[in-house]
Image (cartoon, rainbow, N blue to C red; front, side, top):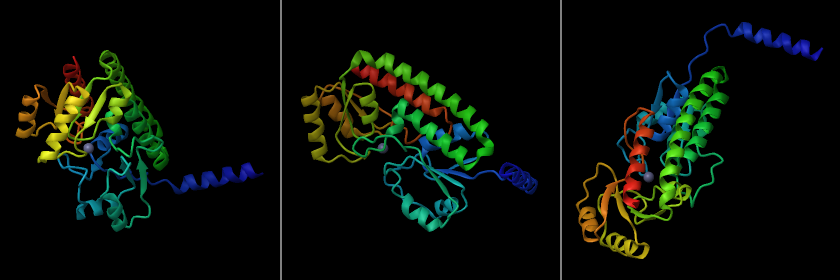
Length: 278
Ligand SMILES: [Zn+2]
């Protein structure tokens, strides 16, 4: 009796839904979230709030960001307090239909550090979280989201295997960074990051330089890694004095909009770390 009634209700609602299902408007915060989401969504448009090349850690939201969120169905964020601009922005957008996907849900953070996307294993978890959130928001597209996510996750597994194979020879290799972006990567592959400063900056204080020098000596560091695209004369001079190579290591907070950029940049990082640890 009940089943018959439910069946009747279902066919009634199906009759009502003859108009085409509207597309989801999906907004993401910064590049890695854009890549992972775009890879899962496929053809349909995905928006990005933090323009590539703009620093995410101290990003200030624009009025355009507020309107983007106001009209969005889904917002994908990294979480772990990286996108500090979001709280006020989401509030201002007053969109009570908005579904937020926290890509770091169920990922155990290391001292609240947000850079989980730099560990290919955790990146897989982020892609799966995004996939599940999108399916919940738009079940009609489940098959597409699943197929696309599986494809991207397979590429991440390949990358993960390469990292493992290459870095297992260099366990405990220690490197110095000026951006505390690699604790997850280091933990996964048993290498060691010593971060002299938390977030990237062009101007290092004399104290930072002193910290770098003592860290190099204390940990017998193999390399100094700077930010790609930043010509930092101070770091150059410092690495020369310490007789260490200065290489760019990419935190993937900038780059192109192509979801494949993740793999290109991660491959380049692997080569950089290998060369430094040899
Ligand atoms: Zn960062």
